[in-house]
Length: 623
Image 1 (cartoon, one colour):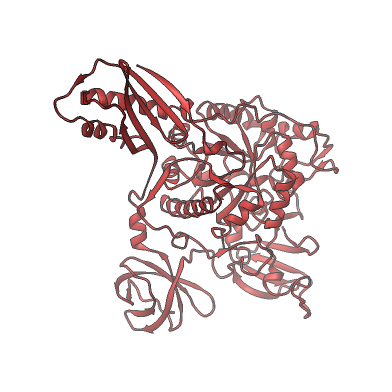
Image 2 (image 1 turned 135 degrees about the horizontal axis):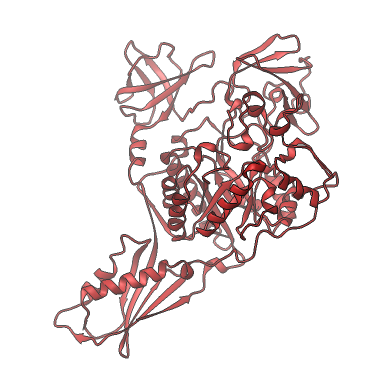
């Protein structure tokens, strides 16, 4: 018995097609497997340490298990090692990366440039959004340092993404398309460290942007009381994927490495379907980056998973529909308005079907959010577990927990497989089997002295080769090419099936190694003419400092986590409170006097000054 590995012409080799990658989050390896099962082309997951979500670390053994599952479908696994490092941690980081490389991880998402000074294996590097990637020049700098993919800042417009791509056509651009939004430029937020000693650049963010603030003037007068003035809605670009792809984005990232499996299943499936529609619309321009067919047992709907309301953010320009001052909590989907209120129940004017256990919420007149559970649903009449006192006729009702939908997602809700065609022929003294998925073909030659059978064998032979349930493959077609009715024992057919399946699964057969060249080459080019770095450079160790010194930087300040500078901006926000309140002189032609200075005050008394750089359309938060 011997194997011949044949590679057929693949659509993946068409130079005119761009590979579109749906990149899903994974808190755990099991959630990562579900992401791939529901249509992800790649998954990003936290390393055991040094990921920007400290609560989402994973063991090397679990990452290895996820890698093995993903590679069956040519899906990729990116591991986040995107914190800044201290000197005492550098050797530990280097050892961990070597272990990740050995287990076949496809790339690292990183922030700290000390990695460029380490003796690392040639594992591809992706520039984390924590590196503040907003300009063509910054992306070019990272590309020159060997970064294969760059995660762009969430704040960019479509035109800015297009300009970056046109200036750096060789660099893959990754964009966030769904999930929570940081109000500050990623990697440039130091508020949590300044107040609580919990560094966002070290994976310990205290989420100050979701807290309540009073807005005050310079005299201490309260202009707004207890509002979530830095809390943004959630990003949703599911209807903008074609625009993003045309602009040059190739990787579409779902935020959520702390989200549960139900969230990842639903959102991944929804975006995967949307990308499939895009690819079907432009088959000569786009393709999916991984392979396999996904069959869902539910209809995905992003509104049914955790969300604070949705926004395109700045993709199509500045707009007022990006913030959620009343609450940072999940709203879910609007399901109707209250028609009648009784002592133990209420009637809602709605077309949706409610279920016992659904979670609903509403805002009262001052804007406070109230949530409750349905104990019993009879058509449009709903009986809460406890009747909300503030519920009134006309209130808009939102459903932030759909019991029936969640029950579906709690069970097996998708299957992913690779359709294969199998043939069996008799050539000379051998049986020749082929298995192909349209891109790769495995061929099995088996010398065997066959005898003619007394009964028809074709049905049993096909049945034996259709038993692919514990593999990534599903039989699409089966043909017997020889004419005679040969007898082949079922046990032998089973052995042949298992052998050819293993060869099709073999990574050398199924995957082209696109990462032969080292991504760790180095260039001495510089990011800009001003060869100095402030605390915004996030330089926290001697190797990172040496990296920048090698490229001509002469003045390098230590990271904020080391210096704790006073009176400097701790947030840089495209979100502008003055614009949100209609007080923007530049865009809204606001003529009435407004306070010359504005401040945010937390309930604990901590106070931030707001500085408005109107030329750059940027709000700075100073502590």
